[in-house]
Image (cartoon, rainbow, N blue to C red; front, side, top):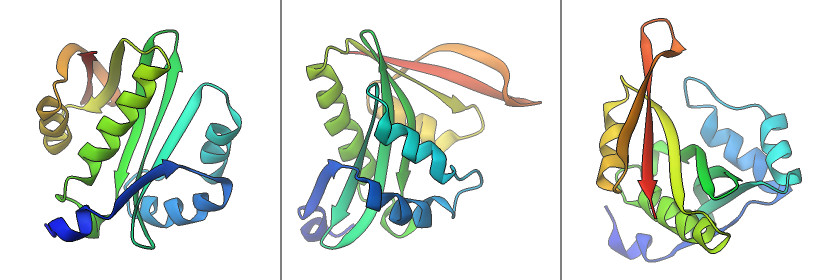
Length: 150
């Protein structure tokens, strides 16, 4: 982890022309999201997405939506070259603060039971397991619903 670079981290709302850059990072995932999903987020009043920059490099994003007083995290994405730097945590905490200012009192998300690194990440950020959803992602791939009270 290069702390000097991390200090140069900027978190900003995503704009339309940023979608192509996010998709370049997302294409490395097993299940990348299509352009239309990101476009929907940018045109919906209840969906929000923030992007992380280090210098001129787009290094990650977080997408969430608000339903009444609950923030639902849809996706956190950090470029493989920048993982384990704390960028995901900074995106998460920045966005939780932002959602809290908009009235969110709880944060929830779903994560695959097999994704141990994500479960550890969310646990580190004060999320607890609320329920287990059998076969949520696919047959024999249960989902965990995790929650954090603000």
